[in-house]
Image 1 (tube, rainbow, N blue to C red):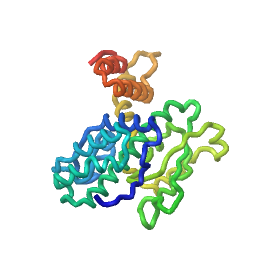
Image 2 (image 1 turned 45 degrees about the horizontal axis):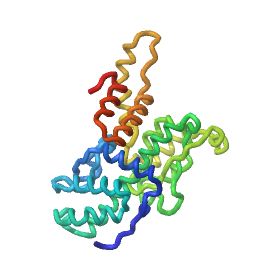
Image 3 (image 1 turned 60 degrees about the vertical axis):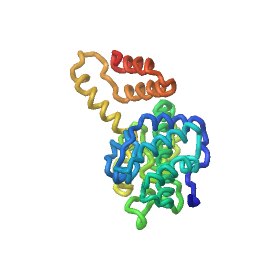
Length: 281
């Protein structure tokens, strides 16, 4: 196999990271596609896919190879060694070892970045009482996307400061695209004040136009679906009854699902459904 430049860390730096990634992947549905943009952004939030897998019978090999690698606390190189012989034998990408190696590296990198970001969203939600704001940042080097090399300008992302619950934060939760190294850091009220306060809506609109449309959508779809589901219920509730909060329901569901994944227990799944919907499935 050709030598590769492994752009992600050789070892997952924290056990907590690996647990987040494993849980994120186990909740995905392997879905073959011909192009990365064949699935919509909402579908990418629910599916594991890789470009040029439609009709190639390899998406399950990639998916379970990645799940097993993360479960073993493996590296990008371990993932490549696990799946490359299978993909080559099946003739994926014409059996071109160099093309397979590049795709495998990209799949590993993308899934780890997306999974870590999903786990970070959950942790930020849990600590938002003390740290209710976020600030966007970039790697601040020559590799950050910007014109004329790219239509998108990720330098415009750097320094945006907003409440964690602002819709822009959910829509632009990083990574914004493949190999994107942008991120969000949490801020306390005093930290926000020292950094100059919240970004104005006018400035936010100008920056949004420069940043472009994110490739992935990690957190908004589920919350939007919950909001749609509870809206009729809230509209018909008796006067004085507290409305259902979709955000709170989503956090409860994420916490319960983490317990189910940790224990691999159908009994816990029934209990989780009962807590969320008032009855077991």
